[in-house]
Image (cartoon, rainbow, N blue to C red; front, top):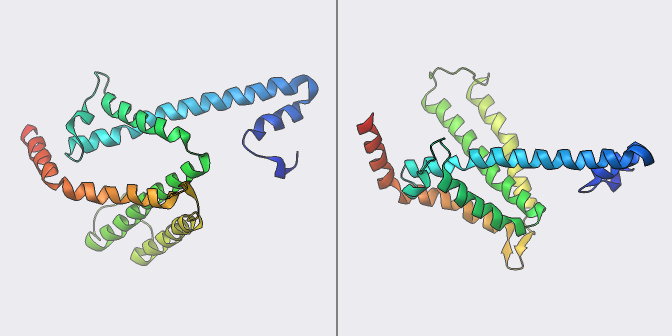
Length: 202
């Protein structure tokens, strides 16, 4: 098989070709089965980890309190259900669009982490750090420039892609990203009350 023939599912075709007429079908089935098991296991792990983000936000007063409800084993079941509904709604989107949204939102979170890293170097230069980028603040800024440029380049490169004829993928990503600061500003009072309540119990 030539590299140009590799598309989604091509690993199974490659395994069938390499295995020949006798072992090819069995190897192809094993590849498909392994991919399915891997996908289910990764999705299960990501579901239980990502669902804790809304639960933690609910504890901090940034989302409705019921999202923080946990089962006896610690699983935030309300948050898992809500996230599951959101993921189910995304099943109708093409994989390319999902990857673009993921890249955009995850890229923005990385940029925020770089900004926080730079801010901490400026405000707390003497803070004990288990690991510190050598070279001081210029090296920290230089480290952040490359990934930040790549994120914005990827966003700009996907500007013509649409989720629907009237909804560009980049616009939906921007709406989701801007919702974060808005929610943070609106819930300032609730966060303060949640912090006071937590301090009373501690």
